[in-house]
Length: 204
Image (tube, rainbow, N blue to C red):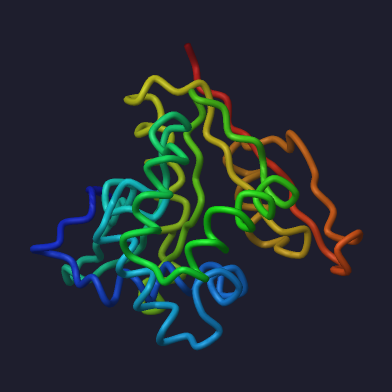
């Protein structure tokens, strides 16, 4: 299975934005817009603008046999996404309230809900398989592809977060060799949930 970077001349940006939105509707609802259509439009702006964690340079796509999008991963090396660059993008693409949420509130939210990303980590922030391509092993192949991408970027590990309740995803990560490297509980913010940080160590 081939995986390639997002190409605006080949891939439908609207479909890509919607698929990524569906990976974490709660987060995008909180930090972009409660209206799904508006949230997807704002996400699209971030993808097109680049220089942020959802930027086009961090999108990797695979296609099914019909040439349709089969799945997407959003991933980057830790030192490739810088706060100052993201802040500039947010200022240019978002309204003032969204800018404040993304530059002040979201970093705090990330700190208490997600793994700490080191400069030489390959952080896998989003993974999605298109509805009509599920059950074909594409998720597994995307994860395996992330190992090669991480190796090519000279990273020491692939890092991701998975919700406590998402046992299906965690079982897949376990099967491919990921190990739990941390836990974050959301109980103190009123949610009966949390995340496992999971890592896949790469050979030197």
